[in-house]
Length: 511
Image (cartoon, rainbow, N blue to C red; front, side, top):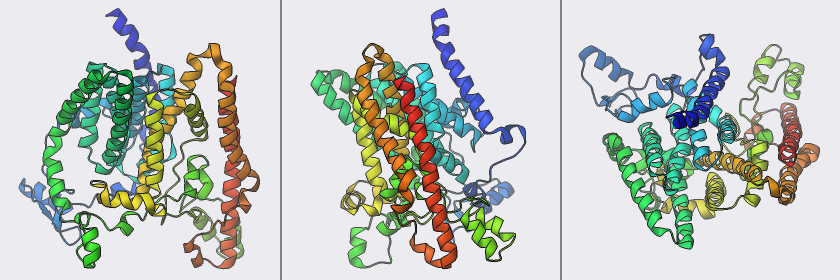
């Protein structure tokens, strides 16, 4: 018992640290009785209100709402409660913290920490990895937007992967428990698109592990683990089957089941899913992928607070906008990428990017390969309409894929793999300090690549791109000129501190 307690103490301290970080991050919510203005939660509060009112008045449930789209089934509005044990387990895992914000940050941290432990990291490296992953930009932006279900499913991706890896490493009990708990929570919170991306990760992981099992002649262990994982998956999905079957049936009658009002030729091609132009509207631009390293590379946000020191504010003042200039400068159209609009960039962290490239050079074994493969797949798929050679084929032939929209969402996958491989790079150096000199060249290369790119854009980035988009035609020339000036300034001023972050990132392991 003493031995178990001794092993448990560091993990308990990690959990307490995660609780502390969560509380600090949400001090206004926890101690000042404030809350986030989460757009989707506010707009969604009216969904099925007629059904809620009907239930309160009669005690019965109706299965059709008149308040949405001229009437629709109640699958996503106000259905009778269905018992699912994983709803209660989820509350326990997140210490019954608010499901709208505070608890989400905590489960990000805890889930990734479990993943780090499963791939062999010590507790303190697991803590660093959890922090690096959790506070990447998209993970926070999506909470602010109010996409609570999506966040829950995102936060459980890493521990599900961790449970699968533990099982393949023949730690059957812990592997089965972790996989069952977090897969059950993942399925219960019902964001099928993110769960689909998780399946892609697990499929690639399973193939890579199979190749290694063949090489190492451990096929018996591989198939034993795989069989156990299939059984666990059945138990995780079973409590939610009633809802999943209902949703699958309902999908056939929605736009995700295929549009009706279109030409016969197009209907035949797209009869089972969304229209591709609609589905691919939010495709991440190829150049926009640079935001993984430099967050303001494409102007950050469509409603960016550029401040009163900006050229945009100054031109508004000179143009007679007066007090409105301050208001407009708080919602400036700085984003000039290929998406219709965005709340912010997908930024992984300059340090994570540098160590990720280092990891590609120095980390050995199966974990590096599946992480690299799914990272490449995710980046290519995020380009959507900008890379039709691959993505159009996937849209029309990959099962179920044409039910989903917003290809940029798949960048949640590199959020996991890049942070994980970055930490594995540190682990590799720390575990082999007696041969540390062999890591110097890879360290110089990774710092040179990432730091060199940042330095280039810090010095001459303003002259390398156009900094304008099609919607800019709506602005008078003098205002557009000021906007472009500010966009250039955002890039060059953001690239400079990113460069110094990378110097620090490389300097610490070098030392």
